[in-house]
Length: 300
Image 1 (tube, rainbow, N blue to C red):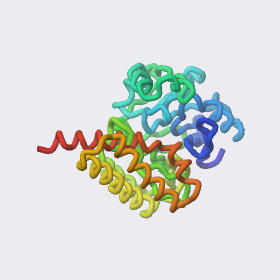
Image 2: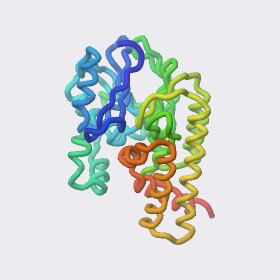
Image 3: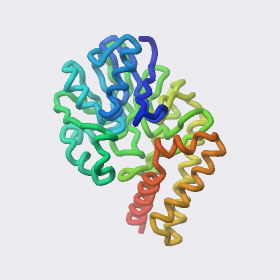
Image 4: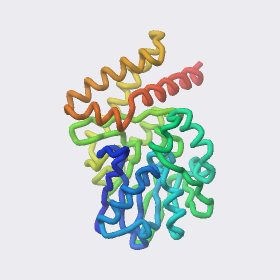
């Protein structure tokens, strides 16, 4: 297997929503973000289509611990005793004991939890390499720089491998080249100031290709990052304006979704429906409202 291979996890039988990335390290395969356990059959099929199997996986490079990125990690490790997971130190305890994560997600998704995400098995501490960010890892023949990139989540990492930069969610949601990247902002950890710091650090890396979890691979260029920052400020400003006007969350969410879908439609006829599935606007509204509320408390 040569180079970086993208596997479309076909979340809920829908292509172009969640991606995993595979590379051969010379010491087994590395998978960047496993996706949820509900999509593990698609990951397995993707490996098999490339002449490999789940048993060939040795390294799970997790950008962060949200279900759509790391949900299947514990299940994979239970099936592949030689494999291990790499995770930020602020996420490791939740992978070791995922009960709080599951309980929190169940409050949002209710009876749809199993259908959407599947199980999230705990990972024994000895099967994890816990990272702070700033480490350079030698994994087989591959040198991996682990970069702390908070903003979307306090436990977010990006991984720089040669010409490739795996940016998880901090690189935004971008469903194809026509679409300007937009920041996914679900609660509870959104911090736009540190997100911008993460973007500044990433755009300085000597890499040619950005690999985005939602969804695909793009040139590492100013247009991507400038577009992400522009839309981040625009979306956050819209939410703040609604809050200042005294609107409730339903009114803010309705207005935000309407204008977001109009802007996406201008970029491509198919983009509104795809984006709505990949990054539900109501979740981004919740996260940005929480961000502004926390910011108001911090600011005298």
